[in-house]
Image (cartoon, each protein chain N blue to C red):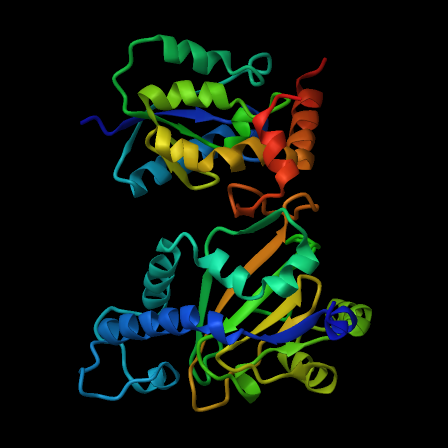
Amino acid sequence: MNKNFLKKGYTILNIPTDKLKFFVKERDKVKNFSRKFVKIDKNKKFKLENFHEFNLKGKKNLNDLRMKIMREINKNRNFQKNVYNSLSFFLDNCLGPDVVTQKFVNLVIQKPNDTDRAPFHKDGPVASNYELVLWIPFVDCYKTMNMYLFDNELHDKTKIFLKKNSSIEKLDDFSKKYGKLIDVNFGQILIFWSNVFHYIPINKENSTRWSLNIRYKNLFTKYGTKNMVDYYKILKLSPITKMLQQIDV
Amino acid sequence: MSKKFYGFLDIVCTPIVPQGLQTKIIKNALEDNNLELSFYTTESHTTFKNMSILKQKLSEKNNFKGFAFFSVLQFAYKDKFDLSLLNKVIKKYNCLFVRENIFIKNINDLKSLEKELILFPTTNYILINNLKENFLSITKK
C-alpha cells in the first residue's frame, strides 16, 4: 500500500503508459465536441486550456456544454471500468473484489476567475465513508487550477475551523496556511478518500481547468445518502457474490 | 401509442414525501419523457410488502402504457427484492422509477439491471428498515 496515501488520505498516481491511450481518446472527444459547440473555425488553433478565449454564442451557456459532454461520456458504459482498470494495481488493494461505481461521471469546467465552485467540504459521511474519489484532469493543472487538500492529520482541526468560520477570507487564509495545492498533469490521477477536506480556489491562471470525477467503493461497505441503483452501479463482483446471486439461501 | 402511465406512490415514504408531492414529482418525471400521468394509487399499510394492489392492477385489462413508481424501494419492502413481480410487470408494461431515474422498457433493460436490483435491499438495508419502522410505528394503534 502507498504509505503516502495512508498518511495523507490522498495520492497522485501516473496512468500507466499502456492505459493512457483511452484518456487521450476521451480528452480529444471532449475537445472536438467543445469545438463544435462553440463553433470554432477548423483552421483556428484550439486547446481545452484556451477555452475561455472563445465566447459562447446566443443562448448557449457553459452548463449546457458541460451537460452535453457528460451525456456523451456517459454513453460509454465501460468508461468507469476503463478508468478503474488503469489504476487497478492501487484500487484493488483499497477496495477489494466487490466494487461499485458512480453511475454518471461528472465533468467540471473551471474558467479563469470563475467564482462558481464547490464549497470547502469533504464528501463523507454524506457520501460513504468508504469511498474513493478519482479526480482526472484533461489539462495540465498548476497552482490555483488545483484544489487545496488537507492531510488526514488536519481533519479534526479543519472540522472545528469550519464549524466556527464561514467567511471566504478566513477560508482562503486557512487553506493557504494548512492546505496543499499540488500540481496534477494530464496523464495523472488524483485519488482522495471521501473524508479528506478539500477547497477549490478561484482559478487565477490563464488556463481553463477541465476535470472529471468518479467515485468507487466496496459493494458491501456502509453507504451514505446515495445508494445502489439511484447512484451506484456494479463494477465487478467476487466469485462468492456471483454464486450467492445464483441461489436462494 | 398510449402515452399514459399509471402512478404508484410509495406509501412508506409518505411521512417524508407526502402523497401530493410524490404525485407532482411523478407527473414531472413523466412529462420530461413526453408521457402523461393518467391516474395514481398506492398500497396500504397491510399490502405494501406483498404489493397486492399492484397485483390486482396487473390482473385487470388496462389501456395505459406503463407504471410510474416513486421508487425502487417499493419492491424491496419484503425480505428480498421482488424481481419476479417486476418481471411480470415488464412483460406487459414499461416501468419508470422516478427516485432512481430508471426507465425499464423491456426484459433486456431489466436483465441489465438485475444484479443491482437483487443487491438493492442489502445495500439499502438501513434506509429500508428505518422507513419501515417509522411507517409501521405510525400505523400502529
